[in-house]
Length: 129
Image (tube, rainbow, N blue to C red; front, top):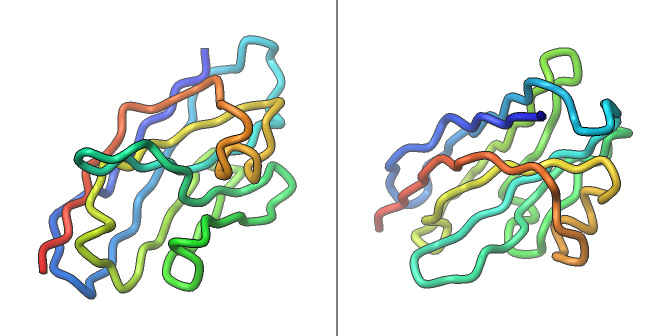
């Protein structure tokens, strides 16, 4: 089964930057390797929301709340999804969770219209003011 392992979470001050990584290993149930990967986040007392991701073909997608501050990228050879987060603010404090799916596009996963089938455990990001 496809497994996703996140890393890079940390505690930073407002205005700081972090880079998160998500490494995929194993195989999807169907054996299809053409899956898209995305980042979700869930802050304290908040609903989970899509943040950013990369389509299998390579196009990045972003939620409006992070456009211009976060950059999603992917290294297909390393099966790794990255999220560079700049100008972090306290409202970015959350557990950041990597997800993937073969049938869902990254855009539909980020906007919540398609639920991914594979999830990581998350990495915590805490931003202090």
